[in-house]
Figure 1 (cartoon, one colour):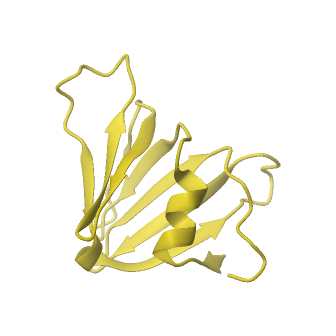
Figure 2 (spheres, rainbow, N blue to C red):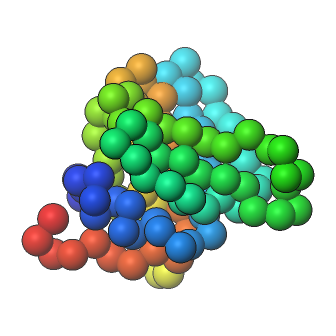
Length: 108
């Protein structure tokens, strides 16, 4: 597992279709059937929206920057092409975005 800064994390996921897994601090697990894309990065939040066939009024996933405790990247041992960027939130929840992501730069 490699720790990432916000800029590196957003550059890894920008323009890519991602799967989303939400792991709650309470142990809950929700796997989205939609594909997600990063659509905006502001001084306040990251916003991701679901690709069609999700309905156009599907609510976006908004991650307030103040809620992010840590961002990590990893590739599971059995996976050759897919990797994950995880947003570990202050509340203990974790949002995992996985897809065909590039490796982070060696200097991160």
